[in-house]
Image 1: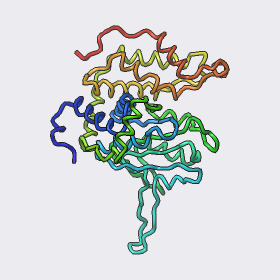
Image 2 (image 1 turned 180 degrees about the vertical axis):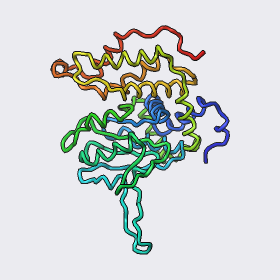
Image 3 (image 1 turned 45 degrees about the vertical axis):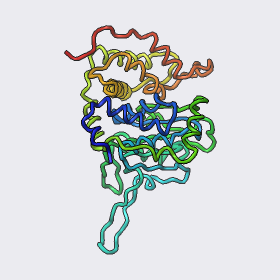
Image 4 (image 1 turned 90 degrees about the vertical axis):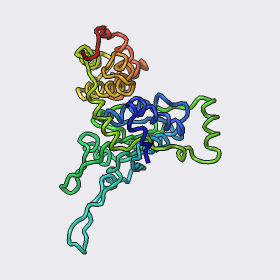
Length: 324
C-alpha cells in the first residue's frame, strides 16, 4: 500500500520520493530516472536506446512499483502479431457471444523490449495506443488505463534482422534516452545490493496510480509565458530550415517540448516554465525526430550535434516567465 503520509506532502516531495525509491534499483542514474518521471507527468512515452544489460527492464519495474501499477513486458520478435499486443475476441459457446481478452498493451505501464525486431505491421499497432490512448479490435474501441506509459527499447549495436522505426512512430515518443554504463563506484554498489536479493523487493509504493493521474493534471496547469512559447517555436523552426537537416521537427514536437517543460517545472516545484527547462529537454525531446542531410552524414554530423548548435545560436528569452 502507498504511504498515507505521502498524500499530504507537496508534489515536489512526492516526486522526489519516487526518484529515491527508484534509485534503490538503479544506481547512479538519477538524471535518467528524473527524465522518465517527466515523461510520465507529461503523459508521454519513452524510447530507450541502449545496449543489453544496463537495467532498462529493472528501471521500468522500479517505477511501476512506486506507483502500484500493473507492469507488462512484451518481448518483440519477428513473428509477433498485432493481436498479441492488443488482445483478441474469443467466441464463448456458453453465452453465444464474443468476449474480448485484453492483451498486454492494456496495462498502465508497458515495456516493449527490442521494438525494432518486430514487423512494421505490429509496430503500427502501437500508433493508436500511443497517440489516442485506446486500441481498436474487431471494430470495437477500448480505452487504455490512466496513466498509460509505453517504454520501448532498441539495441543501437545489432541491426541484423531489425525493422527501423518509421518517422511517424518516432515522432510519437516524447523522449529518447540512454542509460549508459554505470561509473565504477556505482557498479560496485550495484553488486553489493544484488548480492543477496533483488533491490526491487526494497522498493515501496509512494502513491497510487489514480493519485499520480491527479499530478499529471496539475502539471498541465503550469504557466507558460508567451516568450517561452516563442522560444520553443524558434527552436523548432530552426530545425526545419537548417541545411544539415533533411527533416525538421513537427508541430507535435513543439507541443511535446512545451508539455515536457511544464512537467519539469512541476517536478522542480515551480508553477511556471523557465528557459532552462526548455534547454535541458531540447535534445531528448527533439533529436530523435530529426534526420540529418546526406552532407551532414558524410561529415559525421549527427542530429544531436546539429541540434546543439541550433540551441547555442538561438537567443534565450530574458523576460520574466512567472504568472502575474
